[in-house]
Image (cartoon, rainbow, N blue to C red):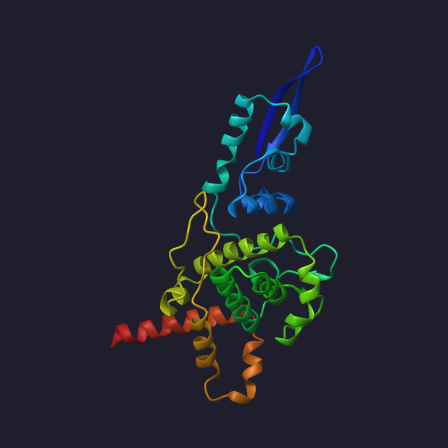
Length: 261
């Protein structure tokens, strides 16, 4: 966190105000992250954005000189320099609903839920369709104690559709950061399955559209199930981290076997 101090004329005096500027994803509040997401999605830096990010009142931001505004805007470069990964969701509970995000590091998120969410995310990157974005969020956010089922996605559609567009877009961007974290946490799996990010458009050094080849997850799922079709749902209900840890161990084991031959 960078401490800020600015001086502005106030009648016959000079008013000194203090604020703070986040320097990493961990230091952003939910409101600030949504504001950053609007930049990634093409919005220009304005008075409202600077106010949200620095905690200075909007009226004070408007009173700044052009030089002060330029210097303040220069401080926003952390967005481009920040890590392109983050393992948690900034909106843990969707306002006005009882829907909750996956926990940090995707704890508790099932492999089946991840496959659906990732498929919707990739589809949304291709079509930027509101309905697909809604399905992505409805597949990620669950009611308390809800067990993920495909049928539950449509049941939450009306709740998600009412959310502000900036919030919904920020969740998609947030998911891209989580995917990048996942790729770093399980590099052998992403490399061996071809689920590496495609070349994507960069905005201030950040990828808003990291994508994976979701068909690879379906193939992995089918290989896990094999002939054990009767327990297919049990495999889908396994935590995604358990599955990826298991696959990593198997990959290393197979690599040792082949290297010794």
